[in-house]
Amino acid sequence: MYLDRSSSRTLTLAKSYLVVFLDFFFGSCYAPSPMSVQNRKKHLLDQQNTKKKGPGLWAVLLAALLGLNIYLFGIRGLPEMESSAGSVDSNAQASTRVHSPKEKPFESSMGEMLGVAGVREASSPSTQVDTQGKKSTIFTPLVWAAPSDKFDLQRAKGIAGQRSIEQWCHRIEGAVEPGDTIARALTRSGIDAKQAFGIIEALKPVFNFRLCRAGERFEALQAPDGKIQRFAYHKNAEVSYLVERHGKSLVGKRKKFDAKVDILPVGVKIHGSLWTSLNKLPKRADLVARIVDIFAWDIDFYMDTHPGDSMRLVIERYSVDGKFTRWGRILAAEYSGDIGTHRAFWYQSKTNEATTGYFDETGGSLRKAFLKSPLKFARISSRFGMRVHPTLGFTKMHNGVDLAAPLGTPIWAPADGTVTVAGRRGASGIMLKLRHANGYETVFCHLSRISKGVRLGTRVHQKQVIGKVGSTGRSTGPHLHYGMKLRGRYINPMNQKFPPAKPVPKSEMKSYKDAIAPLSKQLDEINFSSEQDRTASVGAGLTKSG
Image 1 (cartoon, helix red, strand yellow):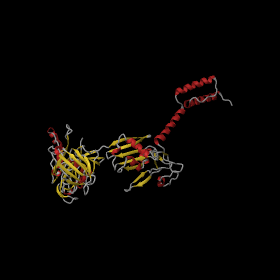
Image 2 (spheres, one colour):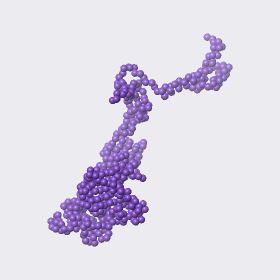
Image 3 (cartoon, helix red, strand yellow):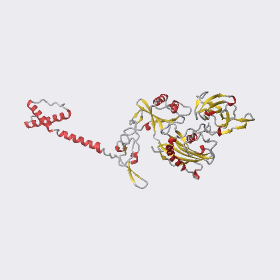
């Protein structure tokens, strides 16, 4: 079959365009058939002209198709597919489909991974009628939905297949019990010894485990492969110690929560004892101990309190996220009753560190040379003077007072002094004797033990714990015999009036008066109604500025 000159020229031109197209998209991978030198020159000339004109028709068509695909799949989204069965129940469509054995969810060391890049919706919406009779269209999410369902990327709640660490980890909780070490507490909760050691090593730079106390809680998140991912030790509501896994290592840190400080006025009428009168307040044991420490030189809260007495306080209250955490400083306090009215104000000098503590309204220090009692709480079971001895049965001089208290109650040093006797002394049992300034001596008998470090010649300080209440020697039960001598002669320790410590210096009296004026006004404004006679009255807290 022979072609005329015109047909041959058309075929050559078509082949040239084909070569240009292939070179444009795939490189020079098409080898044309041998052609004459004249045709070759013409082909090269046509090729140069084509390149100057830019991409040909095929390039334009392919670019248009590519743009259409980007619009359909990337911008507009896939259209909803109509179900082959038009009368399928919407409830059946919205139900979760159990995957076949071939459709196994992805699993890793973190457990089974659920979820997808978006939220699957039913291919057809369902209608819901609310209580007011209004109809609303809803989409029911599916876990393993039919392929006809589409993804709603805007309603996606997270990254594809991702769950929070709390969802895929097993939570372990525990607490430190009396006599526990931290390692024992961790292993008892279910953490293996190797990982418990890793947690302790991670926290060593930031936490002294000797400060662990019974009742403190901890929690951990354990992955399905058994590794601890996170650990938290809650020292209190304001401080926690955290451990997090970073690759193969555990890293510990200390986290402190910002606490809000309010200034709270509190008023209470005494009924029974100070302890029972403060039953409305949280952590009253700590609060009672603070009050006793303030008035320890003037008031014995076991013997000097009577029904009808009143107590007023202005105190700092700490809270985190609106929840009470602890009491702060008692800024002002007043106790009024048969013993008289005693007021105390906290003052800290900005220029003299020695002028820090509680003072009365005139600037006098509440701190005295001797405490009113060497025990925080005690009952006088036998007073100073002549008495019938409980074991000997005859009348004998009692050179002191007997303070009944539970076995093991701490005993304070009533003043600074030096230990002159420490050990067993016949009928007195375990005895301590202290020598103080200005010719005073104090005697303590029937102790269960003497504190560590307290021995003959030791210097002790006021309110230092020197021993524990016991029942050694000639004794009928746990109590403390407390005696006092002045220049070698026994005196009644409960009747003595001791001089106070140094008052606020005259140079700071104006600053002191200005500081206590608003506190004194707050104390005066605390009133008691008839409903508050038997419970603590708590006023509205004022946020502390600065």
